[in-house]
Amino acid sequence: MYQYTLKRMLLMIPTLLGAGILVFILMRLIPGDICVLRMAGGSGYVDPKAIANCHAELGLDRSPVMQFLDFIWGFARFDFGNSMWTGRPIVEEISLRFELSLQIAIMATLTAILLAIPLGTISAVKQNTWIDYLVRGFSIAGIAMPSFWLGILIILGLLITTKSVFGTPWMPPIKYVPIWVDPLYNLSMTIFPALATGYRYSAVATRMTRSALLEVLREDYVRTARAKGLVQQVIIRRHALKNALLPVVTIIGIEFAFLMGGLVVTEQVFNLNGLGKLFVASVSNHDYAMTQALVMLVVAIFIFTNFVVDIVYAWLDPRIRYK
Image 1 (cartoon, rainbow, N blue to C red):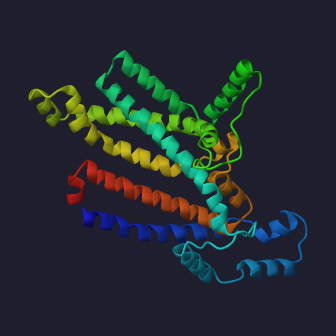
Image 2 (cartoon, helix red, strand yellow):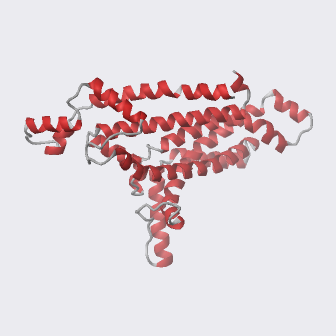
Image 3 (cartoon, rainbow, N blue to C red):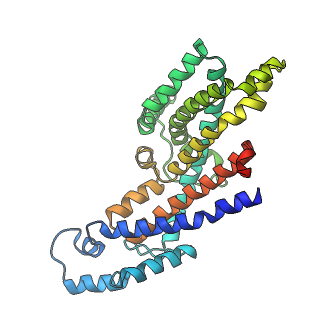
């Protein structure tokens, strides 16, 4: 198990390096100049000397090789420098939004797990019954329904319901407060985007759980367990479900990593100042330093999530670690 874990950890290094090279090159290929955008708003005449001074101030006048080495060295030390647009430390800018995005991602993931695994299991066990059709309809609706549209419906439902009951419409608060400071205020802000995102997330995992479990239930060892007289509940819990969870764990891990930086529209609907909105702002402002740091952060989250998924694989199926 230790060799298996060590190999997976060592594979992170070339992956991070390759992602760093790719994002560095792609950011330099994007048309536009942040100095021109800062001084003229993207239009009008700007003194070339002022642009040259701006490039020197931001370090853009140095060779690409030196810029790349500084970028990699800063990433290794968790020092991304200052934002080219605001001038504030990038770590500080990201930390203000990372906590919110992480909490919503965790809450949405827990919502998806609590919905997907029980519903997918019941749907597979009760195949072609009314329960199966109901669960499949629930999951298909979740896949077909975008999370931001469900968020809009939730907000409209809150406005209409609270106005009819209390006489005054209520909206989730906008200002973020950590959960350990005021749990009730925090949950009133994050629970609805987490439910909207987690529902769609659970729909994909539910269908994957159902299909994987149906395939496992047709295996010979499950027939042998039934022939030996084991109770159906024991067969599902101890033998079938563990093997069926391997593709489900993959889906859950990928979706969790995606939620950390891919909820741009959902954050806009609920007016959340998370990593998604910071991504859009940094790309629009040609803030190379901020965009590079955000991309590398998401890459690191994806890599770490895949590492955790690999460890869960080995726990669910010990044969994987010996291969």
